[in-house]
Image 1 (cartoon, rainbow, N blue to C red):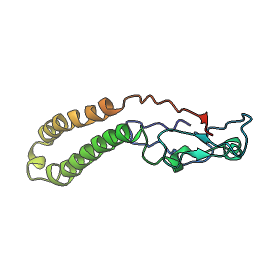
Image 2 (tube, rainbow, N blue to C red):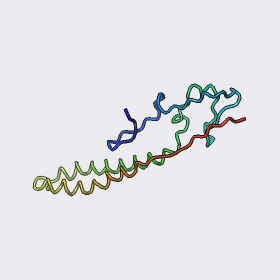
Image 3 (cartoon, rainbow, N blue to C red):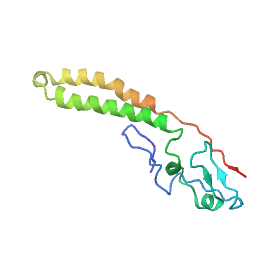
Image 4 (cartoon, rainbow, N blue to C red):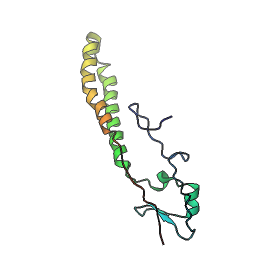
Length: 134
């Protein structure tokens, strides 16, 4: 099952330990930890690397945050509009006389919000640098 952000609003679950878990099986001495830049909680001993490091837990602020926030904000804007659309427009007096017009009008307003979600979903490129530190 794919765990990417979709038009249906599913989110990537980077906290699941069995997914997105880099494992380094290189012969590093226990006294010489590896490092991921920037230096925030970034020194890992070779034993930790051999077990696997949960980067999502150790790097809460990461290069993916801004891109995910854009998608989350776009989804929130669309959902806020849909709440108004249902509670106000679809329950108005006008809907009894011309439901098709209300649907057409409100869907015309909702369409750019849905398009903004699709536009916000862009690839994020990031390189993790692992190096032996003295």
